[in-house]
Image (cartoon, rainbow, N blue to C red; front, side, top):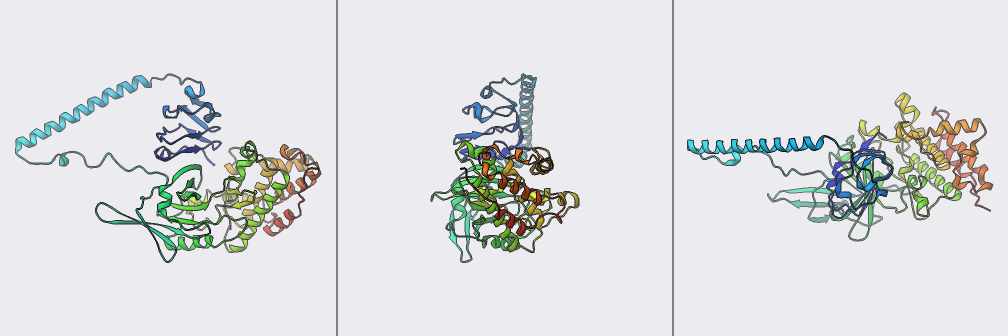
Amino acid sequence: MGHNKIPDSLSHLSNLVGLHLQSNRFTGRIPSFDSPNLNSLNVSNNRLSGEIPSSLSKFSASSFAGNPGLCGKQVGFQCPSTPNSTSKTNMIIVALMVTLGVILFLVTIFFVIRWRGKKQEVSEVLPSGSSNDAVEVPISISIPAKTEERPNGACSDSKVSDQGKASVAELVMVNDDKGVFGLTDLMKASAEVLGNGPLGSSYRVRMANGVTVVVKRMRKMNALGNDAFDAEVKKLGTLRHPNILTPLAYHYRKDEKLFVYEYHRNGSLLYHLQGGGRQSGGELDWPTRVKIVRGIAKGLGYLHREFASRDVPHGNLKSSNVLLGPDYNPYLSEYGFHPLLDIEGLQGLFAYKTPEAIQKHTVSPKSDVYCLGIIILEMLTVERPSQYNDGNDGTDIVQRVASAFSEGRQAELLDTAIEGCRNSVGSMEKLLRVGLLCTETSPEKRLGIEEAIRMIEEIHEFRNL
């Protein structure tokens, strides 16, 4: 993942109550958030720089920790003085002079017109355009006033403008397991930013009826027209498996698409592996990790059977796209997007970070197996794989584990949190070996998904004695 700036559009969300963007390698300055409802902020452990906006003065230093480039009273580091103060004063003077000149010019024109006896409106002299241009927000859809359910399952929301013309936007239900709702329900609810990735942004939305969902705002999905897109997403809506997160609904627009999913409060596997789960008392023991790996593999095997004819059935399998249920049952998300994405969007899929994609510009079902192997190695070592970030950050986890096996020190790589399971070290090393077999550079030498599932099923999950 490259270096990204925090989107300025987030600062325009008037209903924003929480913003958690920690450990996402964001760069640049922090936008000035004017939302009166913002009561929770965490932008720590990024690469942010510059002065902390005064609008965020109520937040403590912990909200900004791990960003050595930041300055301001919140972090106890005074911002260096620059010649900007003088230049700003000069700019203000120049701006006032220009404004005065424009006013004098317009007044002169006005009197010239009157002197000539012409009756022109001021609007004909002034430049066209409005200073109140609409500002795009993450869910940039007109707020509908009325919802009516259609026979085909689409909830049609329409709003009549002042001119009497109706603009229509639809939220299409593809899975009613969690009930039926419309775009109005989403638009009236408050949204909290969960994260920003290569394909788009994610928001947690709690609706008035108490149901909480995740809304993914996707861009770069312009490979298909409306009808073909509808057919593809409805296929995803038919999927039923204990380890698959099936979409509930979608919204189609030419420039962006919205996907609505069930929300799981335990968060992603990445969150737990990087310490978030441990802080909240949700540390993953060895039996739980085996359960998660088995669930991921089974879910992936199901997708490979359902989408056997596709170039890559999942396409974006990584720890941030594995959600954990209350019992730590894993759910795969962000799958099946390959047919929907344009060329630029495809480059954001993790399957396109595999050796065959980098070297030969090809992907296959074996690309998903490589992604599974990375997760296995990540779960056992808790190292952040550089493969997620184009090699720019993190550890080349495949090379490190391979070297450790060749030198007979593979046990040294195991996460210290599971070291206590001495009776399971042999099983841990076996699973580590499965991860290596899944991440062979050559797809021909790599395990197939069914063989990987079989080997994972054979891993024992002994608890501490």
